[in-house]
Length: 208
Image (cartoon, rainbow, N blue to C red; front, side, top):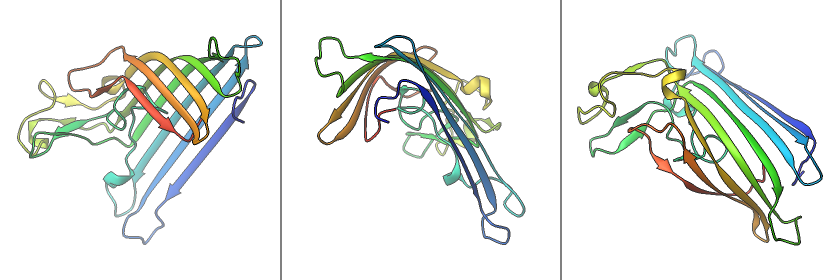
């Protein structure tokens, strides 16, 4: 469905490193979207994601490359892609986002034809509000950064509440000859000094 107006979609994914493997871990994610027709031209989309992952057996911690990341299109727009969650500095003073083994996000989006465009089958606009959090439950200090400087003002506990971010904005989706393209402009509502902001974002290859 390119322009869904009614119904829902559900996705559940589970991954496990088998017992006896060098890395023993598991990951479970769930994505849900609902579409409600409000009128002939207005559709309300509500969606959410939730994920949890951890190590087991001889693997005490989840491998870092299996962490969840948030921010950007498909998550909380207005924040740079993959930058939500705990952060540290590397040797060069650049921020590194660790991600986390827990993730929650949600969005509400009002979809409608682009004003003034005759062929509404190829272009659609939306107004949206996003919220999401990626966390791992650990405490971060200056000692966790390679350069000995904390990204935060003092000690930082990575919890759902401390990592929760919101944004709101507008988006345009175009079914171009090269494939679906989505453009969004978002305003981060509760940004912190440690956040990496990217108000304009672009995505190729998906419509919703």
